Amino acid sequence: MKVARFHAPGDIRVEDAPEPVAGPGELKIRVRNCSTCGTDAKIYKFGHHHIRPPRVMGHEIAGEVAGTGERVQVIAAIPCGACAECRRGRPAVCPAQESMGYHYDGGFAEWLIVPAKVLAVNGVNAVPDGVGFAEASLAEPLACVLNGQTLAGVGTGDDVVVMGAGPIGCLHVRLARARGAGRVFLTDVNAARLAVAADLVRPDAAIDGDVVEQVLKLTGGRGADVVVTAAASGVAQEQAVRMAARRGRVSFFGGLPKDDPVIRLDSNLVHYRELTIVGANGSSPAHNAEALGLIATGAVPVGDLITHRLPLSRVLDGIELVSRGAAIKVTIEP
Ligand SMILES: [Zn+2]
Ligand SMILES: [Zn+2]
Image (cartoon, rainbow, N blue to C red; front, side):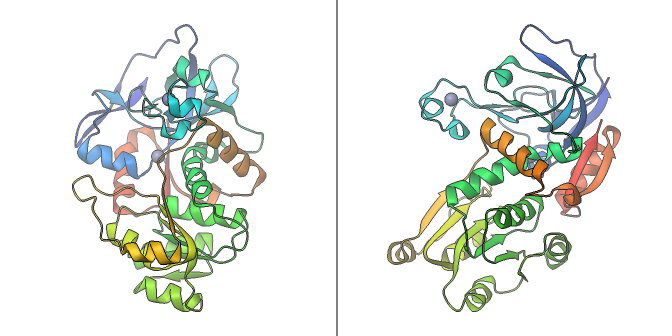
């Protein structure tokens, strides 16, 4: 079969590999869609400390179970199920977490073995009728967005600012609507990308330029109830705190570069305005199941966010589109 394997930074090869065989307790899947995200572009450039090459990449996975043809979506982050965090019902922050495409071969392949560990945490979800494989593969990023908005308490009537108009930002806008947000504003430093995203997800305002000033203006000086930074930008995080309303919640959804993770924070804004700053990193198996449900009911439409469908042989083109910010969502069809 054909696979796309990471060998070293800058070296991903589409090559032949033996078709894998499922061991006891494992599940073999014919991958139909595996979508790409910013993380794949980061791995391509820098590698990842959890990847020991060669490794088949790809972690936004949907396909058919070998033999039965059952249509399924597979989680990416695999909690251990046994540690203190898992036992407290917080598998998204399991310190022993492993991931598809990192510790185990991922979905940029015709066939995939689902490890027994994934099945043990209910990490394989049946895809409802009417949901395509490409849409189902977006349940994984939507699960991460769902985790972030749950932690930030996005709810009815909230004015929400989403900073970053990539695929994650688009999912944040759509999910905020589904959760009953009042107005949703979208910002990006790249005006072209903002325009493309705004056309798709129709925020109440698309903002470039001085975002803090404009959000304050749009909210009558009050600020936003929730600000989500869906960008790897310390500047965005600093701005987010400055544009939050009293009792506002700020989600540092996007991580910062490892060599530049320090920001300047006016702590008195947090103190006097009673702000809450929350992180977000990944998702749980339950978030995946819930996300798939949101896609299936149409509460969070995702089909139109998929701007590019490419065969496995063109996975590098896909990753390149993602790094340039020239696509919303690129999905690979092995
Ligand atoms: Zn991803
Ligand atoms: Zn755990």
